[in-house]
Length: 199
Image (cartoon, rainbow, N blue to C red; front, side, top):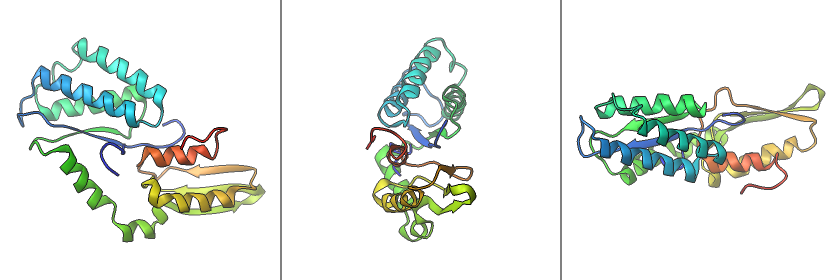
């Protein structure tokens, strides 16, 4: 679950971004612009709903040019303002901008998050997000999906759950306790319900 891939209406998504300007406290207009450009790049490349990413990016540029974030003079307040704006605009509370005041390299942060979050024992115990799958009364399928782990690990569990759903009349995917995760895994699950596979 790297920062680029952590990256709703149908399925949940978490997107983690890092803003790393040269100064830990103050932030310049140039640094703000660089952060905006990085956010729009990651949204374009990895957000699970491309049309939402495009609309959000366009609005973000306009908001920045209109001075919406002018009052945020330090890294913490700028990150908070971006998070609130993105969540309100994209209508996705899984979006978050996280400040990196020490200037740590993004690749290093990605490695740290990947090492800490992708712990095989715990994840395997949770069936890589697919906590349970069953068929309820009236032939209704039910999947309790707690997270979208990376596709390489979660695919067999998703496939097994969807095989059980094959002859049901409807499927409930319970995302109430889902913390988000890999957009590619979200896309793979969606491909079961779409005419054309997205993976």
